[in-house]
Image 1 (tube, protein in one colour):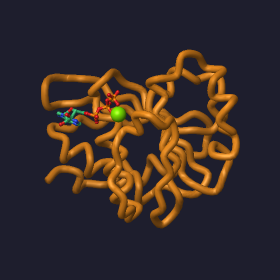
Image 2 (cartoon, helix red, strand yellow):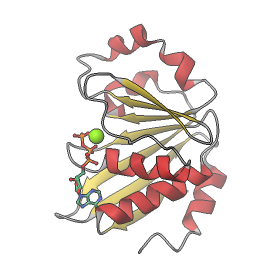
Image 3 (cartoon, protein in one colour):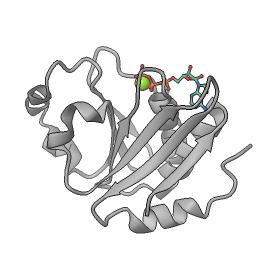
Length: 158
Ligand SMILES: Nc1ncnc2c1ncn2[C@@H]1O[C@H](COP(=O)(O)OP(=O)(O)OP(=O)(O)O)[C@@H](O)[C@H]1O
Ligand SMILES: [Mg+2]
């Protein structure tokens, strides 16, 4: 199934992210798509809340990978500064993508060819200044139950 949710504020996006964080398991990979300022980092801040991470989560501006410890480790990639997809090969990316934590990737479109077959694509589009259309598009079967459960959540709105 595909799932699309419209959020009407950064707080709603974080709340949605929090629910995603609660459902996330070791070895999951979430690939975020969306323009500058779409809300990828905001969503990931919510994920870190859902996983009870204590560190403050920002876009890792000078490091491509940030790691946080919550209920499970989170490997946060921000590929904005990647010039070409092959640069990912120098980052031991497989240890993260196929590792024992949750991998979240901003600007996943830049390395689409290196994404594992099983991952969850999360596409964030501007609707207007405060609204975002967030689509969940599973690749492979791994996220079928995940999306079923997410679609049942009703308390995403404040
Ligand atoms: N519904 C919404 N959901 C998320 N962010 C929103 C929403 N409405 C407004 N915003 C604003 O949009 C901005 C989103 O910024 P954020 O850093 O999360 O984007 P990003 O996709 O990570 O950008 P970048 O590509 O630069 O990393 C914030 O300033 C936030 O306050
Ligand atoms: Mg960001």
